[in-house]
Image 1 (cartoon, rainbow, N blue to C red):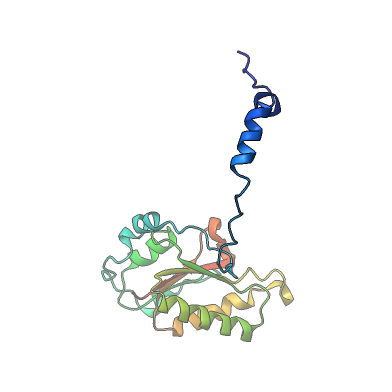
Image 2: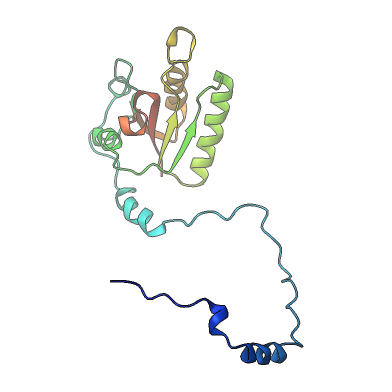
Length: 188
């Protein structure tokens, strides 16, 4: 089926009607510029409130069941894992499986130990002040380090265990960074 095309506008408007229109609007004055201030920062994108509400349904469920000792909470090998004394092993299992949505992320790639410690401290303070429960720390796999060892990963293990508001942490799933990232559950 062929689309019906309209003739160009110049052929449709009668010159007499055009003259009448111009005569009618000859006294028109352009509107003044609006008295508005342009935003200096870009307008943030829309925030999916309902989607987040749906994801957080299980966020504040009880955290106590089977206690796990400090020794049991640290796994051997390179995978980071920690669970605060008195918490259920299910917490760590749920954290590994992505039960809680990640609410914030900090990337420590390329930072020195001191820079990373300061950035992590500031990040944790911000996360706590915003009542975040689950956050991700990207520390890298150490491939760019001397001896290709994950220096920050080992430091994070120590730093996080000392932070009282950290309930649990574990290596992130592959889709979220794998061995180069850590998921952490904070106290509500």
